[in-house]
Length: 372
Image 1 (tube, rainbow, N blue to C red):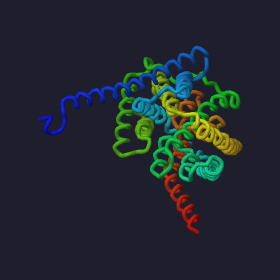
Image 2: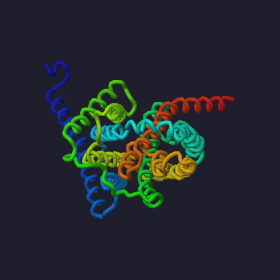
Image 3: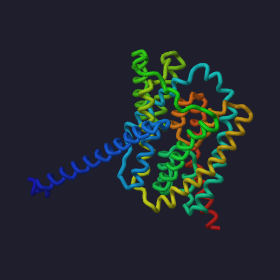
């Protein structure tokens, strides 16, 4: 029968060996990446550097990527860490914070102007100075989520690898710069406890947090909520916090777990990087980091001058890095977590909604100009 249909037993055996090779290689790269990340944690702890669970994996994997080591992020586990942060953020949104929302209105209302200026300066920079095409330049300039910008950019006809490297460079640079600025500019401590140990929390609260994380994640995926692994648990945890069902944040072990896999995924984005990509894409991204940093500093100083929030919280709210990374910093330094996250949500929502529309408009204007 196997001869009749054109499939011999040897074909099945070869297929089995090929699949086994692919699966073993897939897991080998993932396990290798985790071991490198763990080494980074121990190295940072040995030297005594701050946030070893975040910066240790990030630094070790970045060095490994530059050395040519193949890396891969742990997407599912990373999403689990984002679900943990979602619950932590939701637990921080209390009735007292809700009463403060009107006071945040002005500082959040300035966010669209920040995004607009970043785009107006960023697109010409990437297009004229760096030589990117219009679509790629636009999605490189937008301070949105890395995965979202890569996905939108790819669908719009941009270069996903370039967008990924530029956005990862923005994320890496601001996550790296933030601790230095927090300690030297604002006098904040990076050695504050991130939470209480799990053994000190009531089992009922731990169970509640687990249910909120899993059910929020599942429901978020079902309704196709953007950033479902984090946003779903955050929404449910917010409801639980406001109604008194949740009264504590996730334990310290869970926050450290989240830090570890966030750092791992940032570093793994540089896997397979070439010298040409470093010369063009990464250096272009670093140039924009300087530009974006200056824009960010102007907005932070303006908002702080009018006392629309405490300086540390304002800095973390407007720092154009990832929402989850800035949430970790807010927890570590004891900043107003609700204030920080509310501003990042506004930024991300505006970029996600506006990016495809603005990119289409820019492309249509460019085509019209060429036709004329």
